[in-house]
Image 1: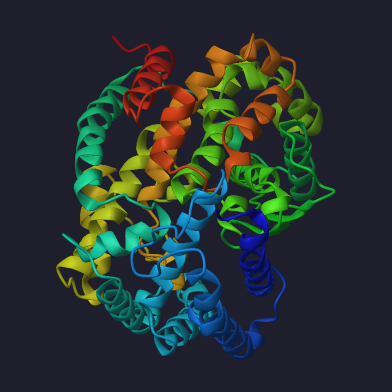
Image 2: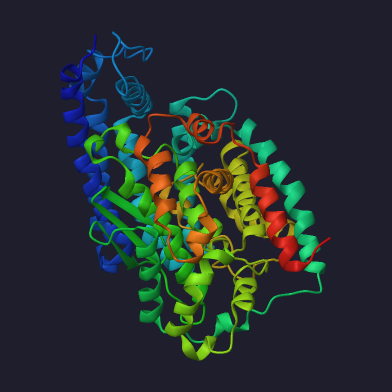
Length: 507
């Protein structure tokens, strides 16, 4: 019998490794927020060295010796029985170990160095609207990601090997019908909305909104959501993100446009959903899989649930709209709740993914998924990406970007080597709709509570149902455990049709 005392040496070692990974996260957070622009080379070398150190610890002799006493390193089978939750912990440790041992240390160092160097190049290229400035770096990263897929091995598609890092168990074969079904439902809905004579006002969103007041209001909403500023903070960055060094130290970022109120507001709510998840992980399992999020799809479900199911709901704004009007009396003075609600839910195809509406958002993800598959599976030349991007934007969104910054250069993900990441955004939307439907069934008068500004019952429900379990269950198991059925995209599309049929008076 594997007792906790026998597993403790492994857990201690894992926590020590996690401390190094937390330091890497802190350096990356600083790189995105406060690091001087002239420090890029030094920071790239720091990150590369630490990533290689982490990898060496993950696959080295000490790790192998500790793990081999508990698990058959070739098969992942436990050497003896043990009580819950340790079978899940050891299963996930072996999964991480098996993946890490397939990647040579020199490769890990090369990839981390290349992505660290690519980050400031992407920023400059985006600022200059010049994809050719970034394409040499991207070409190297794509080559390295293809190499990574070969190291990891795969059954059907090399893209599966990369996708598995972010959404364990998910494959291209599973994603293609999901995206196909969504496309069949979203494109007709988009056409009906565009043809509707009822088009919401949005002019008030472009008025001047003081930067510091936007940040204060966003932090007021975050506090109501249950995000703890005693164990977290919010800063500014070019591309909003959340990073966590420990459940007691979670960092959010947002970006502010004084003539786009929704940019900061919804990025704060969105990142707040991520942050609440990270703060809700059990500290006693820090450094182990039981103290980590299940997948990026489940993580994204938390941010999209708060952003869309809550933050774009009429109930939420019954409480917060009067406060918003007090914060910005001049641009919102004569506005009523219904005009505001319709305006923030306006469907207006955008070039920018993070600023897109609920109806078109997944079309942006579909575009990126198809491009990534072409790059990894079919050797699409990097130089052809802007044309391919613009072609798909025209097909799905109905608009063609006029600059690289509003097109191919808008996302930071490829500069970081995050191929296989984008599909988790759509999976997050689908998980979110299904989870929120269940929350409404289990939390008495949830809409009424939201209308009073009381969001803590929902936060507590998510803590209990999702956050506290870490990686004890797979995404599929967790969704079934909470809702009684596997992932069902119908919850998302039905909610979308119901909402927008009312807003646009569709038949």
